[in-house]
Length: 414
Ligand SMILES: [Zn+2]
Image (cartoon, rainbow, N blue to C red; front, side, top):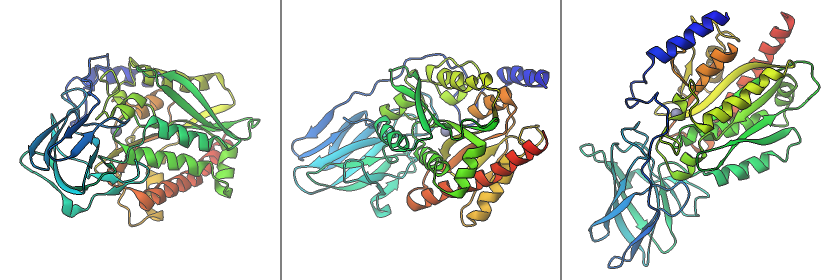
């Protein structure tokens, strides 16, 4: 078995050079220079309109006035070429109520995310009305018609969720007695990388461990939020979750790219690297910190790796499991789990697209290291609100039910 795993991991470095949507050289994960985003507020006195990127999670690289109450905001990625995940985020206000037109013009990208708006400094978010938004198919620009007032209107590709918001979420969760949080390393710019452990019944002689990775890609907010809600559901005071925690610990790394999240990046960390292509060489401090934290399980004979989940977002809600012909433990779990979610939520379209294990991503490293099954869990870009909450809690409940069975089978057969 060890030999087979070794051969597969060698093969990966030789053959995988990126998915179809990746830029060339994506698997070279050494540091490169990124384009800094100047932070400033630009005002047009004759119109009485101001546009600002002076907040965490913002992205608006430059602003030009085209005409009265009509502006172009240029949105640049941190490196180029890059995957088309064009994050944008700005605040706009005016000295009187105004109708303004804003064009989002992308360098090396096209409009992708439906604009979200907030009137309360980023606390609550909603889609902008579809009648006030269109995409210019020729240029790929997004064109927004906005009503501005003296209080800033926030516009963003997805709801803004920074490291500060994450810290508040984490502190809430830590009021539970069985949650531990630990700083396992720091990012390039010195932000904390956190591990959150769910661990109850500490004296059980044997428990399974579930690894949860998240937010390697900064704009993938729906996947990130499903991940947080998923973790909350595992910590709930329900019979199901209590039973689950008797059998399992959870080691979670929900926000792996804090510099990218606060910097309003499209894809990479502060060294211009796609973290989910660095799970072979671990050149980056963020991925290395998580690997080192996970590998500590090798010191624990009373804890057995059982599963890995890596939360992301893309155009559809989709599971990327490991191909059926590859022997994982627990075998084919992702397929059974997807079916179970589909039964619980028949109106949600959940696609399943298997992959081999050659790419240097989190799920494949977890498989190569421990032989465990796993899934890259992609949530639709436009899932939000109640639907997102329901999807996350149902995903977690079905997961716990199936995992409890797996654990009991494992104990019976050993
Ligand atoms: Zn992703």
